[in-house]
Amino acid sequence: MTGYSSKLKRQVLLLVIFGHVNSIIDLEVINKSVPMNIRTLQRDINELSEAGFLDVSFDRVGKCYQGEVYIPETFSGIPDEKRKYYQNMARFVRIIFDMECLTYSEIDEALFQLHYYKDMYEFWIEDDKYGPEPKCEDLKIDESLSADKAYYRMFPQLGKKDFEKDCEFLRDIGYPIEYDEELDVYYKNFPEELPA
Image (cartoon, rainbow, N blue to C red; front, side, top):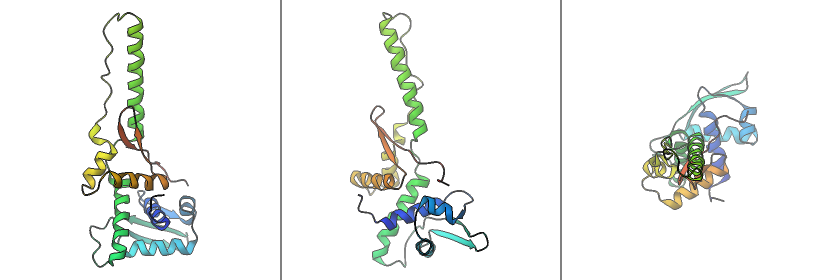
């Protein structure tokens, strides 16, 4: 458990739902992604709108929301006890939408190339080093894009424990940042689509 509230997890997931391009979100989509009752959903949407994270409208006929997600620059006018909560929320939304780092598909491709090279090298050794030595030239991993390094660039005031705690939070809501031992890098393995 990360120490972050279930309300924060729920509201970050709501922002992720509304953050999809040209989002028109019906209540069934929201409930599949973030199970909650309608009153809680409406309270969360109102709170996120008042805090400056959402600009939404509700279509009563279609029973759906349409809106956009924003990350407020500051939280002036927000009471101190809420400010930290919203700062955490803004950080998670920035990680999910804005953090430029390695992705699962890039890691998968790099591992394929690495294993291919290792297999070819073993064949070369078994064949008494006949022919040119295999080279691992196609392995293109920019280690500066490891998710931990990207995180520290985005949030230079935070440290390793913060990164680990935030990774646990993201994993809990279905947006994991994972580590690959062979390549010694962190990468995001976020879902590309909403469940509905």
